[in-house]
Length: 119
Image (cartoon, rainbow, N blue to C red; front, side):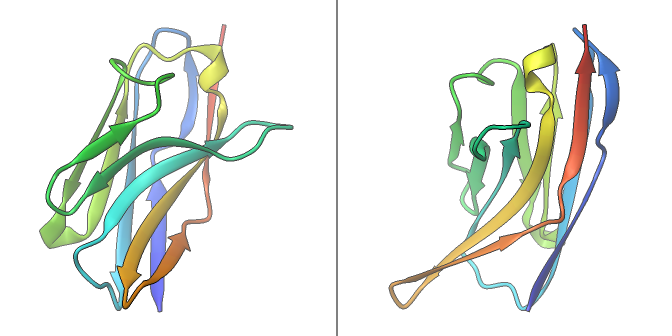
């Protein structure tokens, strides 16, 4: 089993910054993708940013230039540095670890951490 533990959410004013962390433990297969998704009230969960083991990144257009994803493979930890936060960034942020193994995709999720940006 894989466990993901997130930290770093909170309340911040517009224009401020937050840094999210997510540590994975358990039976983790590599290579894998680690990343962040978010879900605002009344909306579907959407991609924030993903980073592969080798360093390839994907960002949602809405966060490009403001958010930076990074990871420490030795610690199985992924980070999301969020700058220039906007009220529309308010959401529950979920850490995700994805493994593709023998043609099957396995997704693991954290419990979520609330990010609230006030105007």
